[in-house]
Image (cartoon, rainbow, N blue to C red; front, side, top):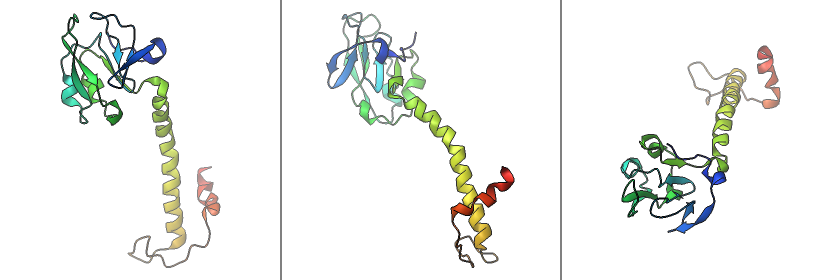
Length: 167
C-alpha cells in the first residue's frame, strides 16, 4: 500500500512536530499519521529501512524513535523538507512507497506539464530568430553571426515573412 497522494485534502492537519506538520488520524503507538507537507512520509506505512536517508542528496531526513509501532521502532522524519531539490530519489527508491514529494494541492505537477508544453513554442521562437537574423544580417564568409556585415534595421515585427512558408 502506498501513501495517499491527496492526503492534504483527505486528512486533517492535527499539529506540528519540530516545525513539521502532522496529518491525522493519530493514535499512538499503532497509528502515527503522515509527517511533512512538501516532503511527506506516512509513518503507518514506513518500514524504517532508511533508504530515503541514504539516497537523499540534501540529507532532509533524520531518524525519529517510534517505540511500539508494529512496523518499526524508528521512522524517517523529513526534518529539513524546505531544502528539497525535487530529485525524487526518495520517492522512487522507497520499497514501501511511504513518501510523496510536493502534494498535488500545490499545483506543481500542473506547472511541470505547462512547462513542457511551452518549451516547443519557446524553442520555435528562439530558432526562428536565429535563422531570421542570420539571413538578414549576412555574416561575412567564414564568420559567425556576431560578425555581421549588414546592420539589421527591422525587428521581429517583420518575422512574419519567415513564418509565411509554415502557415
